[in-house]
Image (tube, rainbow, N blue to C red):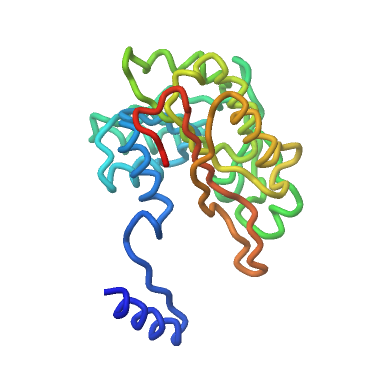
Length: 249
């Protein structure tokens, strides 16, 4: 089988195409699903849901637990709320930017809403991602994650936190301090270069989590500059050693 697969790869590479196995070794999303199934995750907190791309992908791949999505922008929050109506396993939390305090936050609405943030985009981000140019600044509700999560956590829940908040990762995690020890794992998009002004970079976010007992088990590509091929953002998967149901070798 591997002989034929290698021959097919060589053939397609000659015409500029790449053939990959549709399996966890070749796909970041399938590896994440594999780890969640292995660790018996039955709930995902989807922080920075935008219009529900992550949740829909998880359900389509076969995740049969609950997903609770959080979104800060009112238009996107309305869109995702409408999408979730037909799925009893998909709950949309009240509109809020998840950060390290309760109150209100300034929110930068960018041309591509998926790049919107509580932080202004950097010159580098605007240069390489045209959709990250800011078009509006609004005020949105701000909440701590550990003030909202107890509304959904139940005894025995094995929850994972997915974070895609465009530069606000450290503030969200600070606002999650009261429930971090209850989480089975975290998957978080992190920057290797400053994509947002004043953000913490990947290792500044990862090291405190590792000090709290979370183990880095996988890294995926979140954004690579298609022109220079430089890797700017990664998806890091961490598991809480104290809550593992099975060893990860």
